[in-house]
Amino acid sequence: MLWRGWIEPSLILAALAAVAWFISPRLLSRAPLSVSPRSAEAEARVILGVGLAATPAEIRAAYRRKIAEAHPDRGGSHERAARLTTARDTLLKARR
Image (cartoon, rainbow, N blue to C red):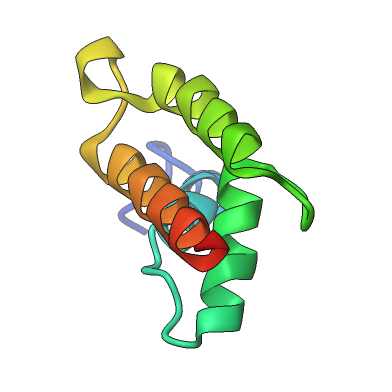
């Protein structure tokens, strides 16, 4: 009865569903890199957008391209920049 004439409950549920849909991928993307070295490398490749046969020069170029968008000084987030740096370090360390 409290809602009658003010806001319909279905509108509130629709708004909550939209917020959950918008926020959930962003929360999931902040998960830390996995413990397993193989899965950490695979995840790092996805983060940087490089293939299996990427050379160190290609990894560095992809990192520079992505960090230009995600750097905190350019309006990006610290978490995203840290994930990119970790991904770069993981892939370059695996190449040694």
